[in-house]
Image (cartoon, rainbow, N blue to C red; front, side, top):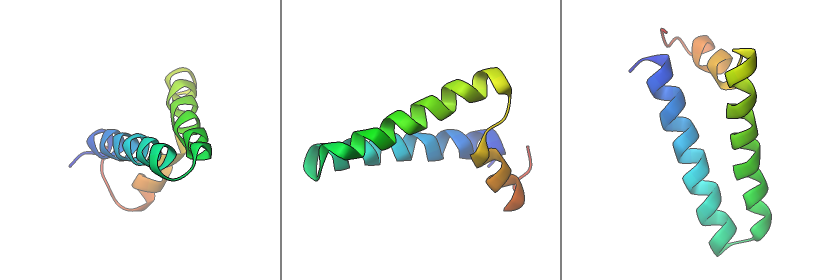
Length: 62
């Protein structure tokens, strides 16, 4: 798995999990959905994503 594939899988999982938690547990979990979305948005302009640094540190190759 490449770093981009891992990043997309993780972002998708976080969004789906936070939507489920927001619906079933507490609506404040939707704030985490917004955080993931804002992070993806800013990474489109800055070309930097914190999760990419984590994945690179974990040894995934780009």
